[in-house]
Length: 96
Image (cartoon, rainbow, N blue to C red; front, side, top):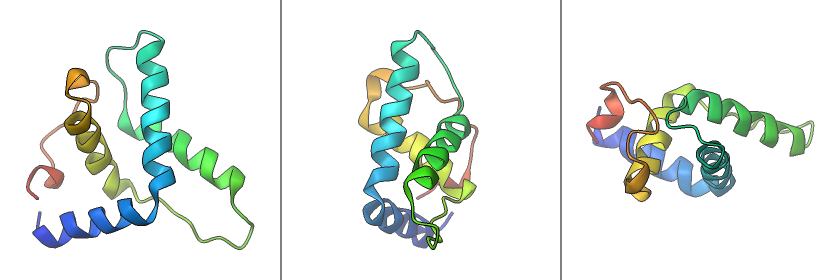
């Protein structure tokens, strides 16, 4: 993983704050319901559903699967008391 990819994620994350807010909200809902582990991909699929339902028909808004590990790791970093909620295999996102 190059520094370039980490910078690209940072820019995408900055440009689309609603994705992060929904990712956190849906993750916290799962934790609140008693889940000890869950899939970051499942959470992001729900984010996609919610954002697509709100967008105009002309929108080209997409969330690449390649960024999901970055969101999971960001969640663990910012919410360390939930470290391990997402099972993270070694990925390119581990090498910023």
